[in-house]
Image (cartoon, rainbow, N blue to C red; front, top):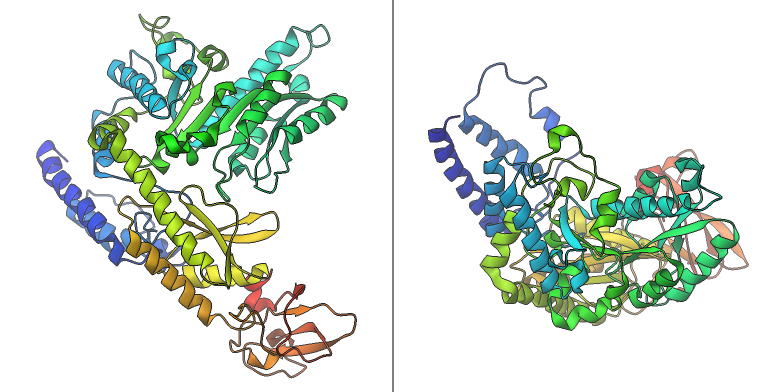
Length: 559
């Protein structure tokens, strides 16, 4: 492809992307495909001869696009926001077009310095203490691939710092690093993202998941007690990862209390604010991270709320020298005339090669301005509150946890199986897409506001879909508006046999047909045995329901 072809097809690609963004809401949210579908559409061997770009795009349109999940659909309410915008896409295009690797100042002077400025810009937008800014000369920020990369970089830095401290002690001065690391222990909330556990596994250190309070928050006294227990066992606490905006329910650990404990115990404190950190650009939400002046590092994903596409994870540290001390490698081929007097981001994390992500951040902030980005944040919160009101207005449902930002966790009242079945039906319809979470032993459905252009009609539509599907759930899993369940004879769906009954002292064993409606003894695959009270079940209010495992053809409904 020469420059003439590139100009032609590049313009066509811009049109293709713009058309997709304009028409995405007319597609299914999730594709109607099965695993392996693309192998039947694409040849098993690569082409020997060049193919026309028009042919490639035809296959993109007819084979690839029908199989993607449309994350930018206004009815996509899963995970956390995966924002996108035209200036972000254009910034990404320019970054790709330069083909520049910004691992050192010499490798990309403009790329390096723009990243420094952008991390200070965003730090000021979040009102971070000045110790986290580059202009302070001791701290600073860096752009990483993901929140996992941010947490891992800080995890490894804390481990390196702890091992260096141990080596200065007489009892450890000749010890092997692996032996010393076996004594280290880290802490996080039981609701922390799974990436924290992954980072502990990679770092080869122990980690404890600590209980949260009634507001799903990790508190200082809980951490303090765990540290006391571990020190008594000869372990060495070295790292805590607090969460501001947990993935399960957007709850907030008490950073102020935890920071006081970590300061007293000389433990590295990292704050994972991947989602909620974006809201801190609004002054009214900054109370959520009280105590930030006492942490050693923090991260946020700008692609979760600042209208940037994947990936754009930002990380700040109080002491950049501690960060770089464990990552700096200086082979001759990477040295340059300003090695010692310029920032080289290859020493601020794990990867060496890194593209210029700061361009899209620069483009977006300048295009929308701080006020425009604040407006987008506030609108997400308003729409989430609107959805919360709809949930609370239906006595079949309940909201779990507090709705602080753009996430609402809700469920059908009663056993978990009812909410599981509801979510299965919703996602299967292709009209909406949401994902679940477990809070303690409670199964919840997560509804989050995703796209830039989401509005009231999207929330109203989502609730209409959810409510209608709830209306159609079979009695076996529905919680009726009057709070009562129907009798066994009212099961309408042949394949669904999971059922709930109060456990009584006197019971008998029954068989319910499933599949073909027959219940002969020799067709055990088509029935399930359940325990039921001898007394008549019709009209009896559920109190302590027991959920039974169904037969093989409906195993997905098992609790």
